[in-house]
Picture 1 (spheres, rainbow, N blue to C red):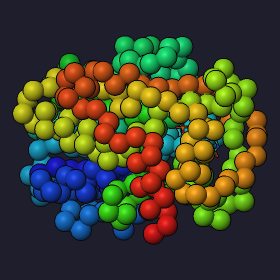
Picture 2 (picture 1 turned 135 degrees about the vertical axis):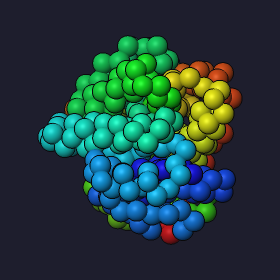
Picture 3 (picture 1 turned 120 degrees about the vertical axis):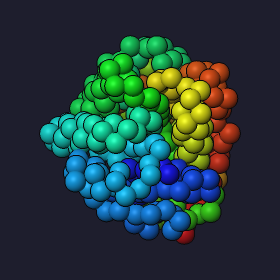
Length: 320
Ligand code: UDP
C-alpha cells in the first residue's frame, strides 16, 4: 500500500489516478491548495497535515504502507519571497516530521517532488543533474534543503529516495476529469487558455529582452501524464531494490519560448490572443531546459507527449 501525501493537488492527483490501477493508495492532504474532487474514488482519503505526528502515527499504525510519495508543498515563487516562513515551515519542517515518522515505522522508500528551481540561473543549454544548485528564491531553497536532508538520511538511516526535479509541468489527464487549477493562477499555459476562453482580458508576456532568439523566456514543458509515469517507474524500481537513492530531471529536453507557447495555443484553439508586453517578472531565468538523459538511461523514461498534446489536453480540461 502506498501513502500519497498531497494527492489532492495537480500532480499528486494524476499520479494517484494511475497508481490506483496497480496498488492500494492512501491519500493524505490538508486541502489547503488541493481539491477533494481531484482524488480518485478508489483511493482512501484522510484529511490532515503531514506535519502532525499524531495523524501520521495513526496512518502508519492502521495501514500497511510500503512507500511514501510526497507532493504536498507550497510552490509559488513570488509568495515564497513575500512569506518565506510559510515555505520553510510547510516544505521543510513538516517534511522532516513526515520522514522521521515513516522511518520510525520501518518504512524507508520515498519519492519526492523537487524542481528545476533548485538550479537557479544555470548557464548551459541543457541542464544535467550534475549542474551546481544555486536556487534564487525561498521556494527553490526549501526544495534543495529537503534534497540535502534526504541525502543525509539516506547515508545515516538507510532511507531510499528518488527526488524528481520537474521542469514545467503542464497538461491534463486524457479523461478530461483532472487538470491544472491554482488559485491564484500564475502559470503560463492555464493563463493563456483562460484568456482564450474569455475569462481574462489579455496575456502579459513577462520580458521581451532576454538573450533568447525571440527575447522571451524559454522553458521545458512536460506533460503531467509523463510526470506521473516517471513517478510510478521510480516507485517500482525502489520497491524492487533496483535503485539507490538518486535525483532525476523530468523534462523533454526541448524548450519553447513564451511567444511560441502562445502561438501554439492560438493554433490549437483556433482563437487569437490579445498580448500585452510587460516587464520581466523577478526571479525568472532566461532559459531552463532539462537534459533528460539520466532517467532515460536508468529507468528507460522518455517524455511521450509534446507541446501539442499538452495544450490539447489542457484545453479539453479548461472547456470542461
Ligand atoms: N509567463 C508570462 N506571462 C504569464 C505567466 C508566465 O510571460 O502570465 C512566463 C514566465 O515569465 C516564464 C514562463 O512564462 O518565463 C513560464 O512561467 P510559469 O509561471 O508557467 O512557470 P515557471 O517557469 O515560472 O515555473
